[in-house]
Image (cartoon, rainbow over all chains, first blue to last red; front, side, top):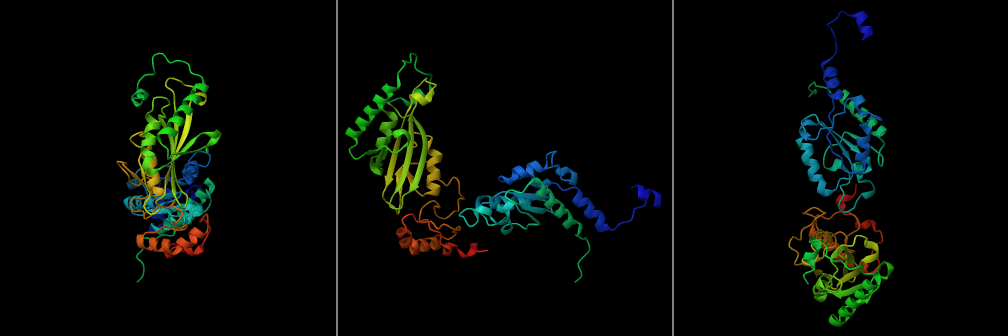
Length: 162
Length: 220
């Protein structure tokens, strides 16, 4: 803030409403503690000090969907689990985001078209960011997370023109 | 008889040291008794290290299993594994049994194993007697075989699906189940099976890849 200190008197900061709201949204994302398969190991690793997802404002994984606003689908989604995922997604409060992590969550991966695997989690819930890989490294997940923050930056509170 | 209570209770008070050859003789005695009492049972040494396996039909399977599990000479008191297999012209349920002597911690030298293979000839409605009253550990394994291979275990108290969804249609590890996709409609699945039955049986393994097997809802 050194630059601003020289230019302005204290107490005044000009920005748009969209900017300040989006800044608040993207700086405090609370992911859901929800790992399905081997991608979850990489997701856990992304929160450890070596990779440190906390640098981007998402260090607290909540164990209840009612306190979370990001679902990282990390693993193979089968038909038995699909109903549970839909239920968890509906329990999350509004302004919720979904990251599909890994080949299985994107398209079924190596298990595509088998008898018990959903061909991509986007068939049951809307997905914002896809992170490819089998499994993706933690850096890839962090990259997808930053892309999700860019998405949030482009949101607006203004009513759309008719 | 009455050996099953001893499994839970303390070991016998004076366990006499028995050498492995004694256990081999006991196994031979049991096999001799099986040969005399169950003439329809055939023997085939098909497991590792020449372990004997008894091949039995569904009618005498339960009485043979009761004899193996509860005899006084060498009771096979431990069920190691249950496997169900679709062999295209019949089904097989294989029980891997072991006899664990009481109070003997060093297992590998002193226990005997045997296989019990139940052959089910009826392909349309496969059914086999449940062994849950002899070995309670068969509970989940028989449910899994029912779930994936579709073999009904008569006498099982709680025969439900265990791995797949309750609404799942069909049994996916049967050889005539389509290799690709999930089938929500039982009638469509049966029509598909009838249509492809001849082709499936002509291919002896029935594992050739056919892209036409994809149900329309699964083409992306």
